[in-house]
Image (cartoon, rainbow, N blue to C red; front, side, top):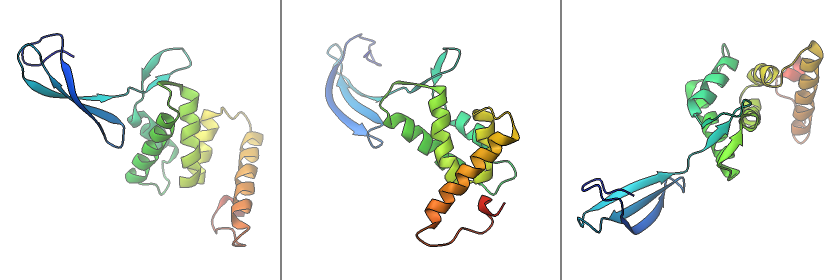
Length: 166
């Protein structure tokens, strides 16, 4: 690591600590040439590999923008979108991979979006999974209904206004 004061190409690590719940590493360094100390913050870069093979850094704002379109006209606020994007990033980072295919990002979006808003989930899934017919929608709705039935069995009721009523 280059010293920011004398630009010496070498420095010595004095202390290392995890920060931001392990997402970053703070290192206290010392320059052997000028003797000054400085701190560096290191963060693992998460890259997304697109279908074309191009790799680009993960961008949480792209997740929010894509989900925002699916949630247009739905009762979903900006805080919920930001929380969903954080969940997506956490899920992707939890894989431990430095590079993830873009389709894994899409899958990571679908899970929390289904919990957030079923209509937005259907919209997003229809584009992400390239629905080509009404049958594709019907199949997905049937799976949502089956999930609701399984979740509702212990309490014995299905929430009103849900897709189960459709």
